[in-house]
Image (cartoon, rainbow, N blue to C red; front, side, top):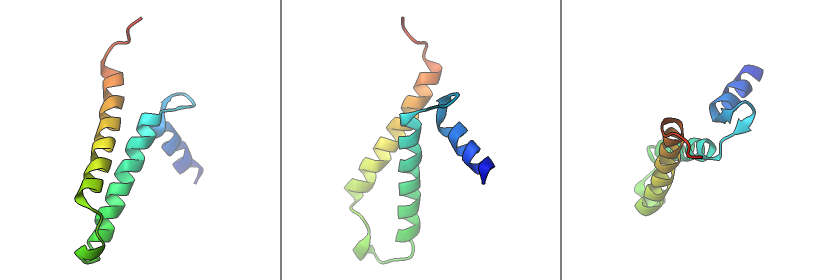
Length: 78
């Protein structure tokens, strides 16, 4: 259990011990989209969320993960 916790902390951390909010938002958005897709595969369309809501979470997730990638690639300005 301790190894799983250390893995999650290292995955969500930008530097040693500093949690990146963009990574947390991206990871949570991915989890929400994955859980929504799994739940929707078992139920009728009458309880599925609106496509606009799913798209909004998708765009936020993509933006957060893309922003994290850009931070690594682009040099910082002084």
